[in-house]
Image (cartoon, rainbow, N blue to C red; front, side, top):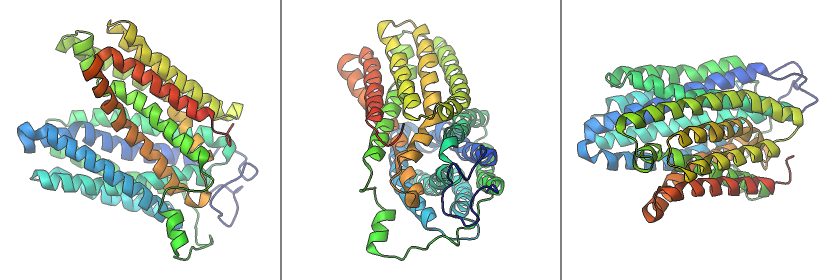
Length: 420
């Protein structure tokens, strides 16, 4: 903590107590997020499907579906449990650091188990265990934003979190792809990155002791508050949750069918589709990283979270509808540039908005963990709705679907009252 922060830790920092942007905390978040997201994406998108194909053969698609479904269920439960446990932790190392460090060690071990798994059942078990311990990192690490950052700087620090997130998404896939023909080495490299992520982030941010914070007695009321969905003072919280859910669904309703859009709707050959996928991915990565750097500080400067989030959602809607009017593959590049700009800026400010609608700082990690489930839910709902409409009406219907989801998400954010 900076010297401006209170000597006895209270779990949050006010604008008066923090005179400067806590850059050290921001750096810890960039590295901490990158070092869990990168390995996760490298395994989930590249190495896990490759290993599944070796073990399951023609049944690989069904096994991937089981892996995805089971991972989503485990992640949902683990987010709540580990978030709540970190909220309740009292130690000389703070509330978040013990879980971030422990989660990194155990997630790395579970990743090595996945690499070794000789059968499909053991692969599924190992992947679920990995998801469990991965979320021991995720939920506490997000809560560092509300713990260590004054409200006036949360846009900037949220943007730094999003920077690590964005680089991890694309960088992790690139790292995983390099080891596609040597999977065991790839798993080992990514496990090592996971292993060092938590300890490195904890060392950099140097969380203060939480021993002086009031301890909670184990009662039915305490259990309900810390291990369940919020039920009091949570109107804006749920508006943010479902708004995020719809905006993420808008993105993944298109990205989940990107290859098929190019081959079946835009009539590209395999080589043509490969070319455009590379260009689209590069556009999305560049716009995401660029807007991540810009949007957070702008949000702090204008003192608003809602306006940037709403504007970003409108950009996603505009970009999503463009391919509806033409099956020229260049329209997907326009989509990538416009919607990618929107999603990049959205990711930068979204966590700052989430922090400011929390019902209670005492359950911050648990409640942020639940909000994070909107990412998972949106990634599932978007492709499911898209597949249904494609089967009924063809690919034209996919683009209005994404636009409508994004607009509805923006509308829900408009109704939030407690945040500017």
